[in-house]
Length: 462
Image (cartoon, rainbow, N blue to C red; front, side, top):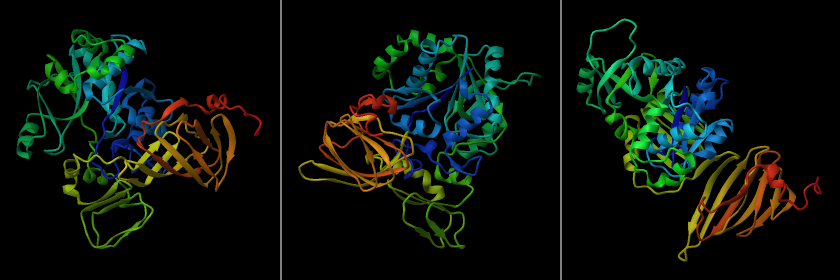
């Protein structure tokens, strides 16, 4: 069996902590095994390791999330990267073609597709492995996992199985239909008919999807699929595949499962009510404060709230009203003010644009020990770096030198540069130019060992 984890989307349902690059699955607010905080994706990857599935797993993601995935999971994780975001069917198709033409996975192999952020017990992943046998026993095109509901929720979609007499040793049922987020009374009626919550987990034989791509006249070679990816229709896997499948079965899961997609559901699983600098009075009940800013926040005598602060903004909301944030901010085009990268993180401190279109952007950059930037240059901006703390090595246009607290470095447009932190390195970076975007980066080398080969004085400074 091969596992495909879907991690391509962006979202604002957990704004201001989530943004276009730091989606909900990357927020470090859950308790880890060693007492540290961890994100949803770190938790799921840890569970996959414990259940022996991580070596068969591939994460299908988008370009903006590659850096943060590398930062949180490391370089051993297998990634398939969409050239652009085009919904779940193109993403799954790209992953299937990758498994077939690059990994040379057998067409008879079972592929299970999961969201990257389910909040479940490890028994859930043992249930995922059963899908291989379910496909074999049923002869179905698709096999799904449905969660046995604990209450008639309006938040989830439902899978309604066909009614039939129970048969011993049969662990699946044929799917009759699907229902998206019904009213509570309707949900209660469906539960009486053995309806299950749709948790977005399904499996198929690889040849099923490869043959479908052939019928749609789409490429089944990975490099060609990447070239043609922009012409694939933006459509969900549900609409393109599930609704057209003739034989779908579902197997029930009776363990703990929860979608932590909104502030009110996420805070239910947090062990502390305060994250970051802040205080709350004893008269404050069922309120959570998550503060990413370096200033204190006081919450006095108000209950049932979520108070969240980050460089992207400040949210004060009743917990039940918090899901409305996605709709409220649907037209927002603000750039992310905080990003986590493979080498560390940065926070935007200030941004201005004058009448002539000239922009100035100030960042606080933290580079972790023994991590480095790529060897790169910019076309549309100049940069000035001020080293606040730490030690490192700097390369500009092939010249290697040491970097210390108090150093000020000017990097003109077109200047090739990189830096490696020897200790944790904090830099204040001021960008000046006509278009200050992350896309204005031309990368030459990534690994420090390869970057050093570009230095004319390598070894002379040591």
